[in-house]
Length: 388
Image (cartoon, rainbow, N blue to C red; front, side):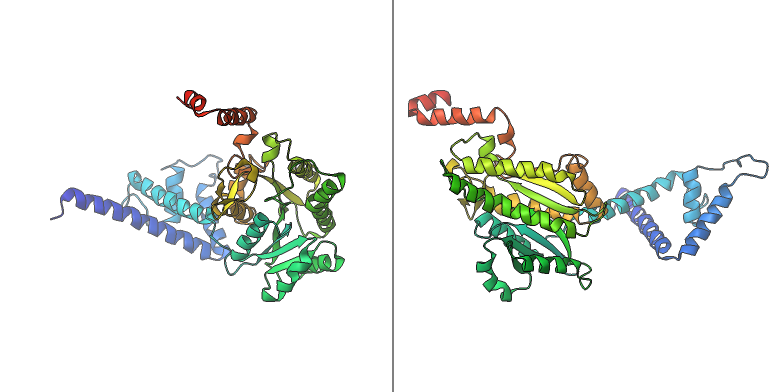
């Protein structure tokens, strides 16, 4: 047998949800009503609150909030619902706002079928991390353009899909086709969501390099992609409120760890940081940078292999965050607002993804790493002594 207390609780919950439902229904009716009807409603409310002919404010018989609620909800009056129960409407309103906020802030796991967005990746698919990022965005229903100097060997697969399109960076014809695609009036939703600047991230030659080898690495990793980007900038359809997102991938871990025997990664990281600062002057770009830590693909370390440490899962540590960053910049106003807060009001659009990506920026971390190596080089007794 249900107790009176439980029955009272059930009645209370029913009343809250009933009032909340009625409030939502009122909101939908106001939204669905014609503009003139809304104007008339507001005009009636304004007339009730207008000054008297003598210029004095009429005597208030209740709170402004209560008066507004009675105007919006004619059934709400003193005989049917006391002032003490106004907060039930506030509770229903709060629940509605929370649900609406959650709905607008949530990001789907993949691009909805009714949307058509494309991304341009400036990088070489021969690199495992670049290739993995390309396939992840492709699996999320993006149209992916991959631009590199080695695009010719991937063009043989072009006929197999319409959503993974290689572009030869040295071909003016390929670049013009991409520009025509962006400007095509038949693709109202096929806009460019983001540009990903991705140098080789999985492997860079270590040790001292000849001048010719170093020039080749800098050219293939930085200069070709940067030159392509500069050519495309005048053709991007952007406004002051709708800038093109540019994400720079920075393999900065070697630089942060002061690994002097890996000069190529040091040069590449320095160039990416310089590009990040130099492109801030372009009003058409929303420039962001990602510092990359350790990642592993299928249990195997995919970058910075000389460290011989385990890394973060590339799916959860890199692909999912990159996808959310892209969608937030091209999503609802709530998603853009959250991204704006995350980047410190747009003043510091820098992200740290992967193991050690953030902690390696601490000035004391290289000393900690050297101390760990010192302990590893000693015999077992010394290690046991320090680990007591």
